[in-house]
Length: 292
Image 1: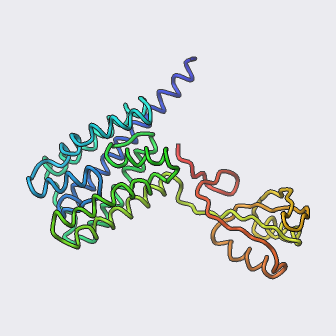
Image 2: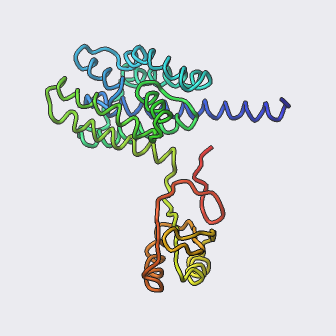
Image 3: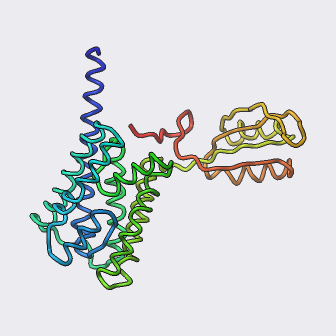
């Protein structure tokens, strides 16, 4: 391995560690400012830790660290040793920062409104975990289980975490004897998982369109010269009519989709059109959505 490659790898590792520190800081603030003061249960081992903190006043961060040991071992076994090293840093750092902000600095709650606390804690957790996941690491708990489930099942990481956390949040209602406790927890869970998926998959929802039409040439010119978008013409064959034709494929911005639909409908009402979301688009005319 030459010196340039070693420097590139060292720089990448340094950036990953910086992401882990930043994500852990954001998470720690989310717990200290919003979650713990309002006893909001976000699910996972941290949810269990907050429940125990409520009854026994034990430090949340230390409890999370203790409960994460077996989960961490599972993550290392499934995701590999390099994942284990980074995740160990994320797990320890995020847990210590939670107690540092809440137990040592004793930061006051940022709001007295539990709904606002649920919303902003969800954003903080989602942003923090999303940044950490970008470094191919974890903080243990159900985000490790979520990544394991994502690898095994093909679910998005956010949805996998949601599935694991749902049961724990539901249990908080029994623990606190309150219907509102799990309701606020579901808000935290939904927002955090949505933010995680947006950070991992991209924020710019472009649209991918496939068009099969007898007026393909006119549609192609409309895409190129009116929408100022590119595309690809693929050779296709109708399975029903056994007829060869070109299938047009293009990626366009969301605001252009209605214009394209109206044009296609006007010139060929019989056209077959498929429109789907796409989160990561690289190339001229689109911002890169793949963060390093």
